[in-house]
Length: 241
Image (tube, rainbow, N blue to C red; front, side):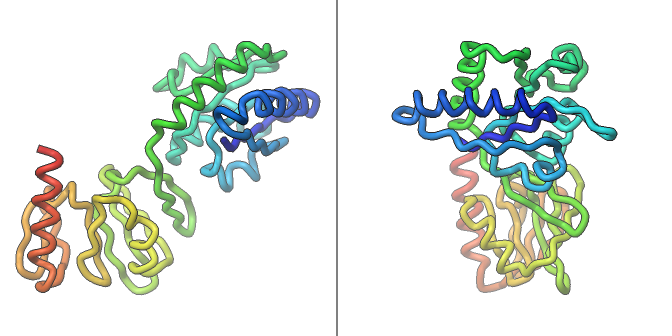
C-alpha cells in the first residue's frame, strides 16, 4: 500500500511516519509493506496523487487546507480513502458540510495507535474493492475517470478528444493507437478505426460504416469490422441483460 502524508507540522508528520513504519512491520506478512511519502504542502502531491492508496491530510496554506484539498482530490477522480487529521482545524465539523461526508475518515491529534489501526484496516478493505481509474491528462487539467465514464473518443490532428458521460470533452495530445493502448485492458473499450473508439456500453445500432450511440451520436467505423462489433455488442448484452 502506498500512503501519502501531507502535513505542514514537521513533528506531527514524523510521528505519523514512525507509527506507519511500526504498523508496516507488524502487518507485512499479512497485508504487505506500507510505502510512505511525506509532503509539507499540497503542491507536489497535487501534481500526481493517483499512485496513492491512502491519504493523511492536515495543513493550512494561503489558498487551501486539508479539507479543501480533499475535495479537490475527489473532484479530479481520486477514489482512495482520505483521512483528515484534526489539530488546528476541526475537520470533523467541516466534513458534515461535504456533499458526501462518508467519503472521508477522521483522526484527532495526537494520533492514538488503536484508532490508526482501525483506519488502516478500513483502507486495506477499500483498496481490495476499489475500481481502477483511467488518467486523462490534457494541456490544462488531469482527470481520473472510471471505464464507463468514457462514452467514445475520436482523433483529430495531434489530439484525441475523449467524450465523457457527464458531457465533458477532454482533449489529449496523443494518437488513437496510444490512447487505446492505455485503455485496452478494459473490456468495454472497442476500437472502430485508427481514429475512433467507443465504449460498448453506450452502443445502440451498428450500421455498415458507422455506429450509433444511445445518445444519437454517430461514430465512423470500418465496414470490415461490422460482424466483430455486432458480436461484441451481443456479448455485452448477454453479460448485462
